[in-house]
Every structure is written in C-alpha cells, then in structure tokens.
Length: 450
Image (cartoon, rainbow, N blue to C red; front, side, top):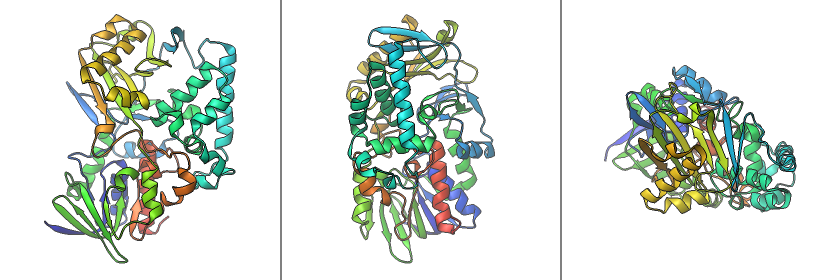
C-alpha cells in the first residue's frame, strides 16, 4: 500500500472538506483529500435528466444570509435561480383543503394566533442561546433535558400549532419532535436567524437554487484542487501522536502534520483511532444521530400545476408526503414535483417495496394536484439513510441531554485532529453554508489565523 506525505490530510470531499483543503492550500499548505465515495459533493448530488438538465437529489437550496456558500459559488462561476413561488399554495389539515396566496392561509384565526405565538416564543428563547456554546445558555440543563415534543405538547394549543411544530422538526431536522432536544431546536433557530428564515421560500432558506445543480459547486472546487483529491478510499484508521497523523484508507496511507475530519459525527465515530479518542468525544458521536429523509421527485413533460395557478408548494398533517415543492429547472422543462419523506415517515416508508413507496408518494401528489400527477414520465428517489458514507440527512441532531453533556467536544481539536462538517458550524448549521463555514474554521485552526 503506497504511503504519501502531506502537511494536512482532509477526510471527506464534501463542501466542508473541499473548503478546508482550498483554504489550506491558499495558506501554502500541501493538502491531500481522501474520500470514500467515487465522487465529490458529500450530501449534494446531481441527477442527470438528459438534454443537459439536472435535478438535485441531495441538498439544493440557498437563501438570504447564507453568504459563505453564495460567495464560494460566485467565485466558482455557479449562478442561482429562484425557486418557483407564483400562484396558490396548499395546506391540508386532515381532510380540509385550504388554498391561499402569500404567507398566511385562511384558517381558524385562533390557530394562526397560536402559530404566531409559538414562533415568537421560540425565537425569543433562541436569542438567549450562544451559538458558539449552547450548553452555556441560561437554563441550558432544563432546556436540554426535555425533547421539543414535550415542549410542543405543553405549549401548542391548536391543531395548526401542533402541525407547525411537527413539520418544523420533520422538514428542517428530518426527525420527530420527541427525538430532538429543545435546546438543539433553539440553537438551530438561532444559527439561522429565525424560524421563518428556516421555513420560508421568499426570504428564507428555500429561496434559490443553483443553475446546473448544487453539486456543481463541489465539483468545480475539486477541479481546482486537482490530483490532491483522492476518490474511492474509505478511511479505516487514524493514528495520531504529538508530531504526526497517519490516516489509513483502503488502498492508501497518508502521513501528515494535521488531519481534518470533515464527515458527520456518527461516521467519524466509526473510524478506529490510535490512541482512542477521549470518552466525551466518542460518546458525542453516539448522541448525535443523523436525520431520516427520502427525497422523491416525479418528472412530467410540463409543470401543469403552474398552468392551473399553483406554486407547487403544499403542506399536510397526514399522508405519505407532507412537504412538496416545484423543483423544475430554470426553463421549466421538464416539470418536476419534489416531495419529502422525513422522520418516522421516511423510516416507515423506507422499509416498503420501492413500488409501494412510489405509489404512496404519487398518491400524495395526486391528492394535491389532481390526476395528472399520478402518471409521471419518470420517478426518482434518494434515501440518504441507506447511503453507506452518509447514513442519513439532512444533518445530525442532538438528542435530549446531548448538548449539555457532550457539546464541548463537538468542535474542540484533539491534538492534531480537527473537526469539520456542517454539524460543527455556528451559523446555518445543517446547511451548505454551514459546511463552508466549518471548513474555513478548521483551516484557520491549523494555520493559526483563527
């Protein structure tokens, strides 16, 4: 097995790892990036539709305030286009169908008041959570000891309010309210600047998409790094001491002065370390599970819902698919509906035969947009929980007690080992922007510029 030398070895060729490598090279460091997959991009992945068109089956959106990923895309010549947001939206509360424009559906005013109060309360609580150290928030122990589901059960006073809390955790964190710490939810809200920044299209995290697909950003960044990016080498072992780090992967060994591990905590925890990592770091990886998400796309000759006056956006509190978007390319050909299976739904439907799962998804699309939605020209799905080098999406989350017990180990270097990945970001954690921030931070730790 060949052994190569570098100043820094980066494990993972997602946006975090590639950003770290690029910044380190700019600082004069010799870098090697070792990636398990046969591609770059991590949780971003383009799917070819033919005719030069692509659709993303991984992370795809960018919104206001996500300045790092926006700046990187501009630097690499990757443009954006707006998510389609013209027409009527749909809301299903049980069997009741509500069509509306703008941000506020015409439903029971008491339900709307409840939702408004919940959002204001969560944002007020989130403002007291320091993003660098959530475990130092006032009453952190109490906030971290309860799940978001317990808090929602005590505070949501309407069906609409309960739906909002459920869709927030399912749609943003890809888990159930009972599975995530209240403190983690507050940290997430603070890191993005508010609930609506996370959930909205216009003015929110779903506002824009990348022309050519989001993976194009990682691909162009990797092109700059050239042969320094080594694909198809899963890392199995990391030996480290006061002077050196030795990373052993399938078919490759790299010796370096530092290592950046730019992979989700749960995957980092599966590597063999010599000497073993401190207990608090190892137990952190056991208390930060990945979310569960299946991304489902139905492809049609044209976006017929637009002709019918709909945005393609829908939310529901029942059914297989509870969040839907228009996901067409910039020229609207072909037409694409995007539906998410998240949290418990992703796990339940993910165990079905693929044909059964497809029928369940298309039944939801038909419920929203009529019989033409039942017969797509193509159907695409990506279950990130089955990906061996991801094991879930959108990101990791802390279970109750996780932040206060293990949070200090999330970003802290261990000797010459440094941690990156969107989970370690302080702004826009869980998003592409957070991945870029984490890579920049890890590089700055090594070069001494932080």
